[in-house]
Length: 231
Image (cartoon, rainbow, N blue to C red; front, top):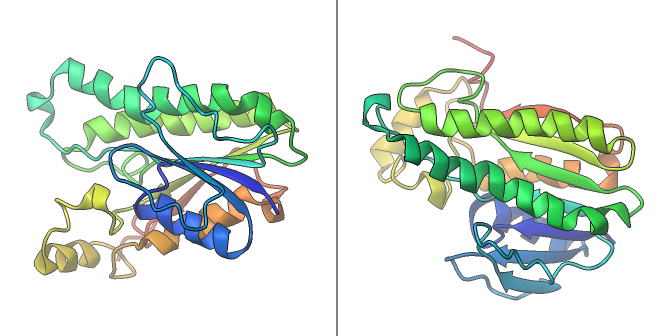
């Protein structure tokens, strides 16, 4: 039984992952920001804003086997309409939030026998898309952070990253707000469907547990083939 802290466990991939881990009898500690989180099955839950100066992660146990950082944003705008401060705001949530959480949890992770960290990127880092400069910049930093920390923390702590394409979560709500939009986005992928939270949670569960103990420093593309196939 592993102790897993999921930042952003109240919806989307974080919620799906929480349910899978709880069903397998792991102890899951979940945080939420604005979306409330049902306490059913969780070892402990806590409202956390990762942008707060005094980040409180006291809910996490002293021995932490896994840390998953799920918060993110998908703000798609033409580059000419983006203010420099927009890049700073996006970077604070997607990158500095992850940095603060990892630093706060590092002593607890070091107390575990085979700890693991899982972060999230996007297919838009490897494959250029219109209007994705904000998210691609921040998530590109996450991919660099993944590899750098995997090297620095080896052999004690494993660090890996998942880079999805568009997934049917509240985060992508405006992009998938109708059946027509969902169908159009599905057709852009070689596998002709959009991702589900379970598609990403299945891999995250594997990476956060000891069954992936010989994997670190990797960015896994779970994107329906979009990043590597052209049909």
